[in-house]
Length: 476
Image (cartoon, rainbow, N blue to C red):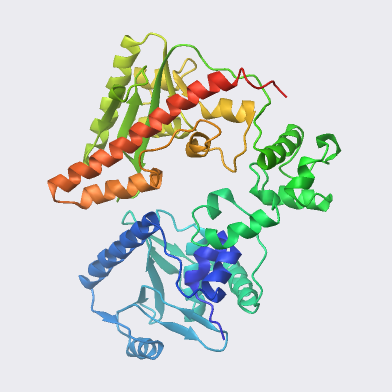
């Protein structure tokens, strides 16, 4: 009998096929998590050890070796049990809470160390609710959060825990791999992508298309449109309004299907780009901090030239320099404003603007003149992703910077390190933080700077591509 375990909650909350493959996939060699996922696990283990040490400073902590050993330690009434093992053979449930802590009532509370800053994440609610179910008492479970605070989870988690147990029971009882939709954001970072993607491609799964979410795909299938080829041949006016696919989105969906199949580029609106002195702007930030507040370790700029020598940046060695880096950024903007009277600060996606907004709030500087200039009505910030999305349908699954720029038939800009990404940058920066050898630190910094330089160079090349391609393709 396959046992239901709360460690499956993360996979189950994200994709039931992943949860099934984890348990019943029959892989000879388990797919390996990427470097970012491994870094998260490393930090989680370190956080758990910190909590363990804190508890040991207060009470005697006993390490459990088995479910039977756990029961014996509980019967003895020891204060804290580490690496407890709880087993409900009748219902096929097994769980491994980080800690069991004896309450003044004599009963035990389950406790887990989590890097998260909130106990409200679905998988955390499930895991702690699961432990409460195994303990069979009404005491709330404890969560030791990543910022050092504590939270509790009680009866409010019962409903989602019930859903998880019944869902996993049904999943594990089946020998048939469950049907799921494709999700660009989830599938591209999943360890099972190489296993699942060929099937999606073969059957022309509608959710492979940008803008076609699961409910939209279901609606299209309900109307008899089951493949990308069928969608491409459909008159948008004959598609009924369905969830997440109404009005102009239907026309775009049909064009996206055509673009997917043929590689064609469709211009659906005129391209509008502001005139001025363009500086291309990109930040690198680290969310894996003790406070939970993202630390921007690199503010990168490409000045009005195509030459790599015009790359400018602000670097901070760690989050103790966070405010200084922010103030240097504001000073840099004032310098650019004086040097370039028609300043355009071009970035890709809303991330840079939202980060500036959060930093202004963090340091109580919403009324700062430079902040008002950056975020006000006449802001120099320009999100170059918007004309891409508003003006074109491209043969892409996602419209991220690398999706657009790396495509050989589009911008065709290739990063010097082809495996680099924002998560790659975070991994390198955390290696930089942990490294004591100065030559290695220097190389890690140089690698990150080169990646950021390529990001802003790609944004510059995208601007030029937009100006060029706008004249090649008629508006649909």
